[in-house]
Length: 120
Image: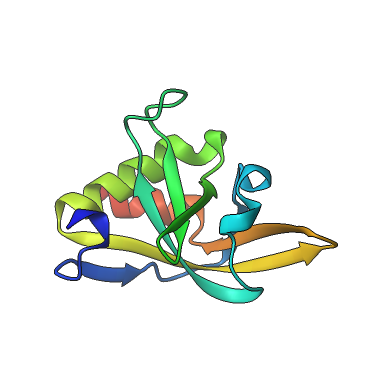
């Protein structure tokens, strides 16, 4: 089943007032689909050899990058918390293109909102 199981609750995070770039997209250009607004799933990646707080970003079941390292600890906590409750974490994002290169900006809640959810 894995984390793409249909038996889990899908939750698009509300209050998306900030943007966050997806790190590592330069290594995953072929995996990025389309352009414009689309859904992205955030998945904790504690077995990541570089960062135990890594949060992978998926589009259409393909990994397209990671939450930036300086944001990963906070987002890892939220994604793990919601995952334990049976909820997959989704956000909308914008695929942009400059020539042949694509990059992704995720629409996310502000840091203080995420911290409030973690306390609640």
